[in-house]
Length: 57
Image (cartoon, rainbow, N blue to C red):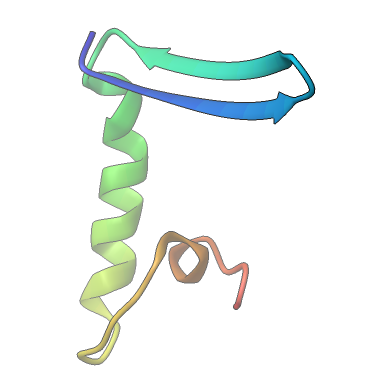
């Protein structure tokens, strides 16, 4: 596995998990290329994935 995320929601005596697992680096390639292309046209600063995706803040 090359990457994974788990989000957990806890309640009274229970837990719900949402998991994502990537088994190939190719799963990240499209997003990495998109982010790199976007970043080339931006001024210096601190940016997040919401900026790359055009979601605003």
